[in-house]
Image 1 (cartoon, rainbow, N blue to C red):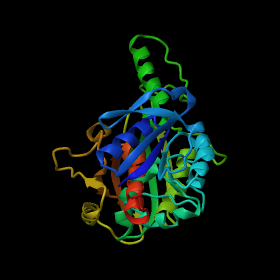
Image 2: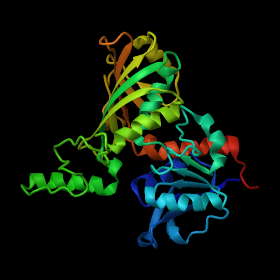
Image 3: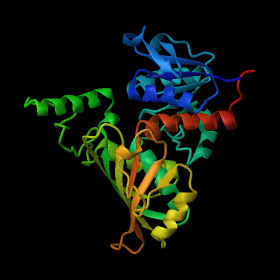
Image 4: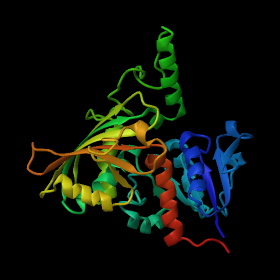
Length: 340
């Protein structure tokens, strides 16, 4: 027998992917419920080879629901995730609201699955930020063999991280450009087509953006470490797929060859050598893939023990929906028992 799973924010980009991945990975679902705002009621959404009705989140009774995969936005999740948890469901929340709550585990299954042990404190497990997830997956095998001292990361993040309206804005601005029309920004602070924007989320008092702050604090919570992280987050005119140039300083020697060995043994990482057919990986190359892809690995000779590498991942999958479903898989395999 399987589980009753509710997907909150089912009509959004991540919600769609959650439903797709539940079906792709044969997650043990007996009943799946799609939840969204009132304006989506009456719509149907695909789950495998069938269409399911979209129900209104505000009117849904979570009693009897085993797992909630939630990606409706932070404000909505702040209200409804505790309601679902109180009704007995375990909530895997993809928004930013609960990530730094000391009673909520922040989990990347390849890195810290053991933290799921304390999900019972609030009945909520947080899914990390998309850019943090892929970096943590790549860093964990290295930190296991040579303790990481400092990380400097520059991200090149696709517009899908801002949802469907952000993707629509890139499309429309590109279209306007070729029609010699003015491309006025709405979702982004500046024009995104044929441009790069060194701002993701709001600016904080110290000049960092909220996205950069997330990468700093989330990396250390996930890895249970005290790593100095300097993050620089940039939005680029790419529809799907986040890229990162990562510089890592270690406390002891770690050669590129040893890094390759560690990554090749790790779950969720694919390493591409410059001598291979691909040479290095770009977002176009990994569309629809689940792994974090590492390439352009080289020694950083500006510090005693340093490496540089290029890291690319599909942000709607591993950066969001897939990571949430993988948490759910650990949950049902180790912590939950399906109804008879």
